[in-house]
Structure formats: C-alpha cells, structure tokens
Length: 71
Image (cartoon, rainbow, N blue to C red):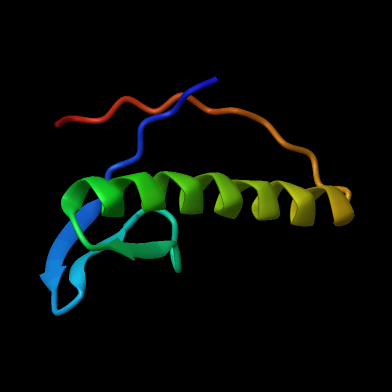
C-alpha cells in the first residue's frame, strides 16, 4: 500500500529541512532536496510503524477512513 503525504521543505544551513505537517514531530533533513525527500520517506515509514506498534500495545481498534481533500 502506498500513501502520499504532504511535506514542507525549507533551506537550512545544512541543506534542506523537511517535515510532515500531518504527522507531528516527523522531521528530517538532507544536503539536497532529493536527499531530504528520501530521508523523510524513511522517517514517515518509521513514524507510522511506531504509531502502529503503540496502537497494538494499547489493544486499540484500527480503521481506515477515506478523506477527500481540495488541493
């Protein structure tokens, strides 16, 4: 399954900072935009894995909801 996430990029002293507005605390960086985007893809996957693990430990039910957005 693939999902698209909106990310924000900002030039920094080290290259580019990147974060996911929809996933609080999900940040990364890279020397180039491509490296930053590659790194945030890994960070998103790890963020979601941890969130899923925490949900399972709490024995919470999970459901999927489709949302239509206006871009």
